Amino acid sequence: MKSIVVVGAQWGDEGKGKVVDYMAASFDYIARCAGGHNAGHTVIYNGNRFVLQLIPCGILRPGKHAVIGAGVVVDPAAMVAELDNLNGAGIDVRGRLHLAARAHLIFPYHRQMEKAAETARGAAKIGTTSRGIGPAYEDKMARCGLRVCDLLEPRRFGEKLSRVVEEKNAVCRAAYGAPLEVKGLCEKYLEYAERLRPLVVDASSLLNRALDEGRSVLFEGAQGTMLDIDYGTYPFVTSSNATAGGACTGRGVAPTRSSGIAGVTKAYTTRVGSGPFPTEMSDLGAREVRDRGKEYGAVTGRPRRCGWLDLAILRYAVMVNGITSLIVTKLDVFDTQREIQVCVGYCYKGTPVHEMPAAVEDFEHIRPEYRTLPGWQASTEGIRDAQELPRTALDYLKFISDQLEVEIGMISTGPERDATIVASGTQFASWL
Ligand code: GDP
Ligand code: IMO
Ligand code: MG
Image (tube, protein in one colour):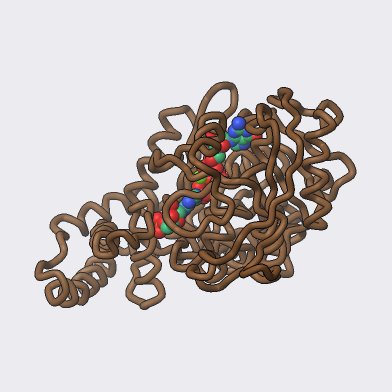
């Protein structure tokens, strides 16, 4: 059985899109399990750049099946726009794209509520992607969400939507003094329904059947470990489980059916939005990394905050996700660096900290402990064979692997599909 989960080991944008696109060549099914169109997964091949938000990257590989699992929250407008983009690029999705009947829907009122909540938070705002993700998951948990299966039954959908809007308006009038703007909403959504209807399946049955028949499945994580609703830097997180556990519930395939967990990390660290970031660089250092790494949000265009590699976070990610193989991306961004700092652990008031602080307030008091390693000051761009990497770059990778006690199975040396090294003799190599 080949069933591999790819998770982000940091705060998202680790390069999961690039990695999943590369790996997808060796898998039959590629599935998203959590998050929504807050994700932005960039894939570049033959000079074409695609940013996929809801649809798994596997769709770009002819003949591969792409599945949107029940744990994903789906904005039908975003989904239809993404379908149109793919059609426009000549990518035929017919018969290969599948959408879980159990996935929850995002409505414009979710975005409205998110905007109101973020404004009310003022300086303490989370800095969300404004896609309505949080409020849609809130409704799911409050058991007043509407799902893809509802959308397919016009009468039922109309009735349920009126009931939910009535309930929400009672709250809105009391809290904000105005009802929700829902004119024409039902009709619009029923139009989307006709576009989505042919894609709808029981995604859990589909994936389990595929595994029963000996097909291979790759699970494409979204966001990252430190954005996980339970294990991230709460409340500066997203509203879903971005870790490997979330991949199980979001896909409806048992944990016993995972044969490996791959964790993706950059050679450094970035984060978008607010919240703690112990290894954040000074403005000058961050600017160089941001320029070289083109660190601007794939979805919102916001500049990403940049910092040194944080092994405390990666150690935590290895533990929480059960990562069996690491993928290091963006090694080439460090090509000009004279020296590289790596955080090997945290100290709290002079004492080593062995566990990730639960409260964001505690992050203010922790101090990263750094080790300084020499840079390689040579180009690694586009290298495809580990033996061609400068000795110092190999030493940097070995240091990470030794510290974390996990193999490095893949190294990415550029955004293009073939700027990739698969480390021979690793478990990772056996998956491809
Ligand atoms: P994701 O959300 O984890 O899929 O990552 P994003 O696509 O949001 O951000 C990663 C960015 O880094 C994208 O612009 C990629 O094209 C780019 N990228 C991925 N791997 C590499 C690499 O090895 N080197 C460089 N220079 N860029 C990379
Ligand atoms: P990918 O899959 C990076 C961040 C937002 C914000 C917080 C909450 O591309 O790695 P949300 O809209 O989810 O309620 O925002 O989470 N965030 C991401 N940051 N990459 C992502 O996805 C993200 N998805 C959400 O910036 O800080
Ligand atoms: Mg991204």
